[in-house]
Image (cartoon, rainbow, N blue to C red; front, side, top):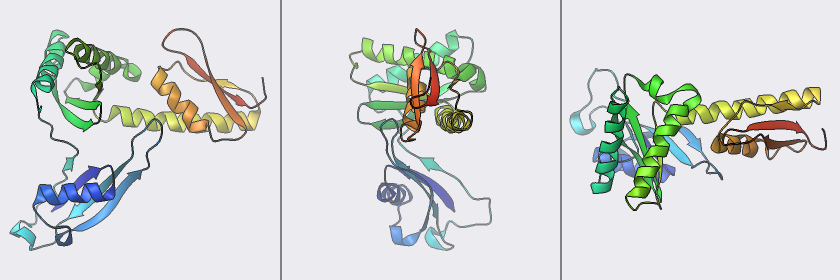
Length: 229
């Protein structure tokens, strides 16, 4: 059998695998699939693949491998989490759609939620604007219920990770173009979080600088050569 587990460190991911599978770490093989070091605007994680050899636990057969990713107990753990998930599911119904919400992670003062829906593409919206609106309402709900200290993050189909990866690629390709042409470029309008990704990604490139331009929530990032106009 093959499983996938994720933790903040390799040790945490292996311990989670041992607990979930009821096996000691010596009873299965571990391969690191993905690793990300923590940064200012991103959390670190390690994703591992766990393979249980034939004969262990008597569960091996010729069926297709089972892929199972575990990051947190997806069920609400207290009245607040249950009320929040119910609120969001009812919100989607009032929008004319349906979705199932569950907990993605609990980390300090952050609570990550994700939803599955046949209407995910609509609920995410162009460049995630509908998803941002749902997340905003989730945080308003938390504040109205005495949880101003908690930041709610809402995702679906790993959109936020995919969007971050796309922004990093956009930042590097933009910087390469600016270095080649010596002319600044102006990126598409972005929310504050997305702009921080661009600024942070390019902060270590010696001859490149970035700045935000425009008014309101959605501003544009200009990439230019340091000292250039």
